[in-house]
Amino acid sequence: MASRRKGRILAFQALYSWEASRHGDMQKGNGQDAREHHLIPEDLLNFSWLEADKKAGLDDNISSFSRLLIVGTIENIKAIDSMIRSHLKNWDISRLNRVDLAILRMSTYTLMYQQDVAPSIAINEAIGISKEFGADESFRFVNGVLDSIQKTIHIPQGSGLCTEDIEAAGTYKRGTAVSPNKDDRIL
Image 1 (cartoon, rainbow, N blue to C red):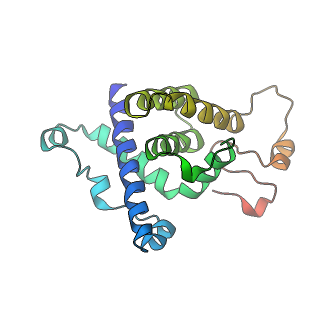
Image 2: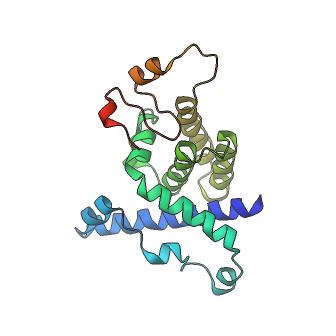
């Protein structure tokens, strides 16, 4: 599945760029609208940063998968960031470097919303991308956060937990958020 790996790398690069442009807009005083409306610049989805020869050689499956990850992550950014925040220990999301943040967001989107992707695949792909693009120890940090997230999302069968226990704990169930207040569910 090398094409999925390429799609994830493209999505990671787009999300990195999106975060950098949001940060720049916020410093200029323009970030509120972009952040609230989750605007997705067309150049992100057209992969405008790629060299012409690489862009021309892009397979439709790769670009479609990458666009799915980009759009899905940005459209669900509040829920994704909330999930990441809840699994950071003694660390604030605003202090994460942009590479780690983009990888965590993309992978958390996969863990939360892509039921057809095994959690181990999502985490292993994130680790690989982190080793390739992140700082020396980033992959360990990314692995720890994502492993914690997937343990929250995936309640093991036979654990003795029932739906009411999960709802009372406010634990996330893959594909839909479960909060203590049923009216606050994230779809």
